[in-house]
Image (cartoon, rainbow, N blue to C red; front, side, top):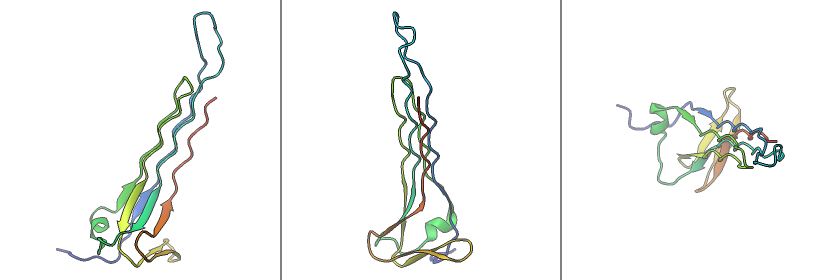
Length: 127
């Protein structure tokens, strides 16, 4: 059984933004009270952060697929959708992030250093 891994291939995905809402305000004596649709929420980011307590990439070796949460859709009554949660992945000090072509994207050195590997989607606009 593997106990130490220093090279992994991660498949990450940021969250999608929520849909905006098209809605018209209605009351008993106001048949067309005007637009009141809310904006959709922002999707979550995937962030790689250096953590001193992590010494290996073993967790990512066993489960390489990670995804941040999606934003919620907007609602009537000018209610905006909830933003998706960011997914923070702890990595050991000295981690080098490469793309598929082998180009260096980030060199994470020092406690607390972070890199946004995938940015979440923007929420849709309401009326």
